[in-house]
Length: 211
Image 1 (cartoon, rainbow, N blue to C red):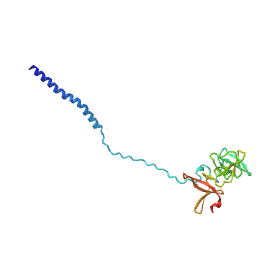
Image 2 (tube, one colour; image 1 turned 45 degrees about the horizontal axis):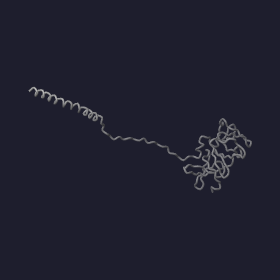
Image 3 (cartoon, rainbow, N blue to C red; image 1 turned 60 degrees about the vertical axis):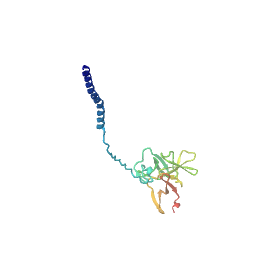
Image 4 (cartoon, rainbow, N blue to C red; image 1 turned 90 degrees about the vertical axis):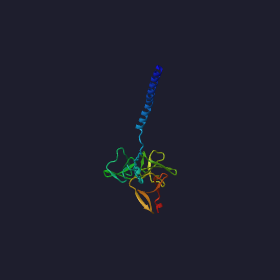
């Protein structure tokens, strides 16, 4: 009888301990399930509005685009920039500054054409070099140069036919002949053309070719 009571008590304790242990085993799972349940967020459709970047519309590049920071051809100025070179030719005291030629006009100066035959020792920074036949020429701001033989000087020459340049000084004219536009600068005519990248350049042509 004693054995029966003791066994019964042990069984009773065992029956109590098993559910308790089960609760502790299941509790982390329930807590973890609750955590997952609380952390879970219902998916919603998010609409992202992209910013539209406006690009400027590029118009046709003007013929004087490269020289847009230089004075307009024929402009009268009070003073020429510091560091100019004085060149006397044909009884006139010209001033040469940053590739631009100035002629005296009273107490002022005017942006003018360089006289053919005048010489300089240094070419302007940014000049263009090209070859026609056996001759090498240099160009900048409407003026053409050729190096003097056996000399370090450069002489202003007449625009050679076929010369292809990248820009003209502001002050040119656009003339229409036979429904086609040409550029006239001083007494020289230029035919506009485009290269493989659709960039416009200008070729010196014979005036008789316009008829």
